[in-house]
Image (cartoon, rainbow, N blue to C red; front, side, top):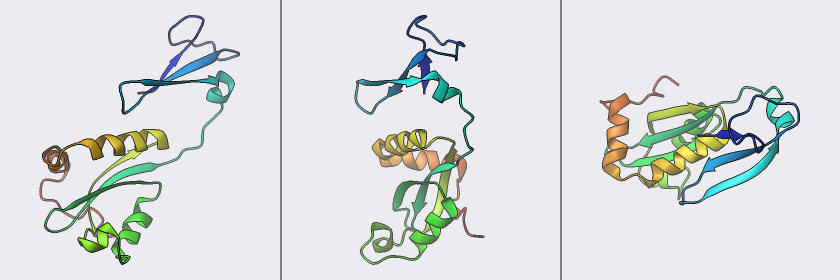
Amino acid sequence: MLELKCPTHSQNCSLWCHYFFRIVIPQRSEGICFSLVSARILAMPQDEYNFYIYILSSRSRQTYIGVTNSLRTRVAKHRERVPGSYTARYNITRLVYFERFQYVNNAIARETELKDWNRARKIELIESMNPTWEDLAADW
């Protein structure tokens, strides 16, 4: 979760004209990363971007987790079965789960979080949205 903290008021602040904000980004470790960003930059209109974390699976339910900005293109690349790649070696080509994010940092953080989960927890996540492990990209 991204929080904007006004250094003057030590809280979320609506004074976007000249303050610098401290961005608090939870890290994988126990520490927290701080950086100062101009509020003017944050107030600028942002383009709409889509980033995805995805889980691919083989028929035997071997899984692979990744992040991309073009889900269709990335799934197609995995289906090319490039020799020597993990997905080719285990025939992992079925898209069984994905999440969309507007910001790449959030997608990367979620990918890192999912990769730290144990297998049972990943299976539970997949089955909560796709109980039969159907290929969500079968029509692509």
